[in-house]
Length: 640
Image (cartoon, rainbow, N blue to C red; front, side):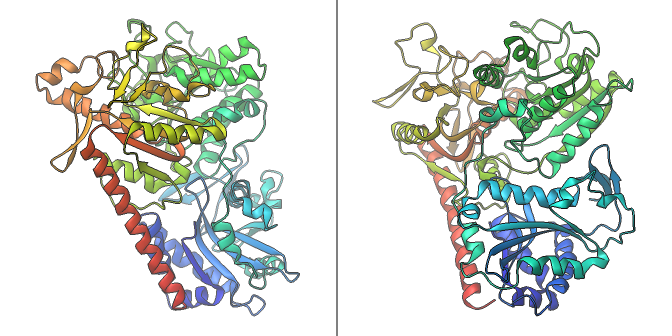
């Protein structure tokens, strides 16, 4: 997505007149959300430096300049793009990663650098890796780049950094991406200008950035589809931004497990689609490759079953598969430090007790930390969906301190699901009355719509499923599981003609089975997995009354023995704490279901007023986007 675009002449003029930061901020807030002051200051400083580099007659005035270009299928953004043709008429794009750093310390063990950013010193990805990873991501997902034979040339410009001979930041043996994305420093503006003019000197004859921006996107691979390749060492996902930093930091500690006698606990927060599971699996694969003992851990059986089935299809040994994927209740009797590393996905779903009857062990968080030298908890407290769930950042920190572990915390922020639309996640929070704030997302980025009846939705999902077997129906837990004992009965009955069954009674791998699109999954069989499209039925436990979205614990299925366990009676008595927890669980459940899909979500509500509310919110977003597009078109026509 193009945030700011101008000709070279217009860009330089914006910089000279001191309006570049405001121009970028205006477009950024139209398309993404409110910009913080630090970002605005960075735009003003870095883009003015780039204007000086580009201010040469060698580069035509009408070459295209873009700032803050958002990558497809994720929320990361390229700082600056120079797009056009070289002297031979070939279409090229120069990608520039801009840094205001004055100094940085190379960290060779981690393949990162340490510098002052965000108010303190921290580890960050090397600028060349960052620029290179953005170029690879753009090329991987955008078909127009290949079909139009557009070449990408990444680089990084540290315009405040004084380089000295022997500075390790330019060491290609540690940072091999430098050979593909060269570094330029404070004194290297002329060299950067030569790099750009080697590739772009005149406008493209084919509106190159429009071609890329409107290019057909290749579908993003789902984790379950490429799991086997990852476990065999293939780099199926290029880790970008904070993913890369967490990966290298965690692996540095994992590789030291035999040399130091200290536990380490990592707490990685991140919302739906921020790459928690991808990072967990990549860490598992890398750890196993080093010959150390490690497992992927989850409370929810659905992802473990799916991942195990995918490896079994590729003829991995059953014993190896079994040891790679463990339930969160597997460590009640585990010996201390019996694992080098445990990677705990969906850590918010951890329980206090283990076993079928929740009567074994003391605390799953404690048992996991005790069992591993390095334990990594991936957590999103907004995805707590059961009264049994006790996974929280505070509890993990408590048990880490009790067991003498050093705690490392961080947050994944890049959005990879929902076509990388952070605006869609803000839309969900707003429409579910979880939190409110200004949002927009381009309908072209994510297909969200409300169906008039469940049969219409089922028809759409079945049609989408024909392409890749990655579309599924989901529903809130408002219908009893009557088909468990009588397979001839239907669980979900809506209106005179819609009939469907829950998926529980026939398979552990419903999410990838060929014949499962006719059945409906719930939160327990979908959390931790992703689909291309999802059809979500919202039951009577979520309604719209008197201008507000309300929850109703009494509308949950009587056969739901887990999510509201122990809350129903206190809720009926009006206990405020129980009512608050039940309300949170219901809202979190639908937030999780509505964010399972990568391309689009079709919604049906049993409450007509809620359907109208969601439909109205979708239309309001569309109105905002249309206004922004009309405004941008007017500015373009005015020659701005």
